Length: 139
Image 1: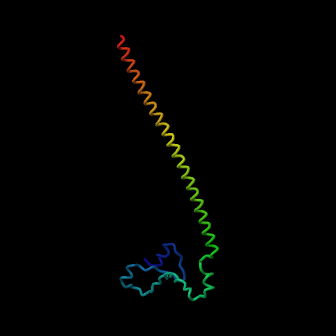
Image 2: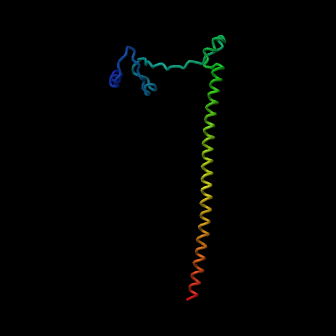
Image 3: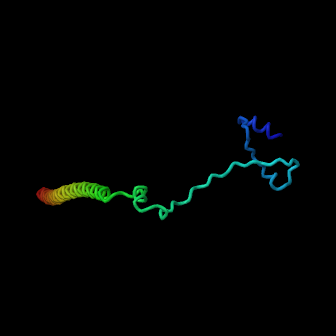
């Protein structure tokens, strides 16, 4: 197949200077045609700025650094957020502690009631045994 057919089948439009793809097999074997293949240039990333070439008064406005006022304001906002978060955590912890105390009190109350009922049932059983043996002896 020809390159012209490949461009039309892929749905690309023809430009004045078409960019052709080179086949990997073409790079290892010499081509029958002596046409030059144009590759798209690879974009390069610009290097880092050299601030030494600028005067100090010019570098400061170009820099993303913040002023002392901005830094202080941001620091105060961060501290305030931390205070609010710490207060919310303390309130949550206090709520959990109060709930634990309420559950502990309820547990102790139920435990005491359970012991009372066990003693009461034990006493009833003893009384029923005594009355059962006493009534048999009278007959």
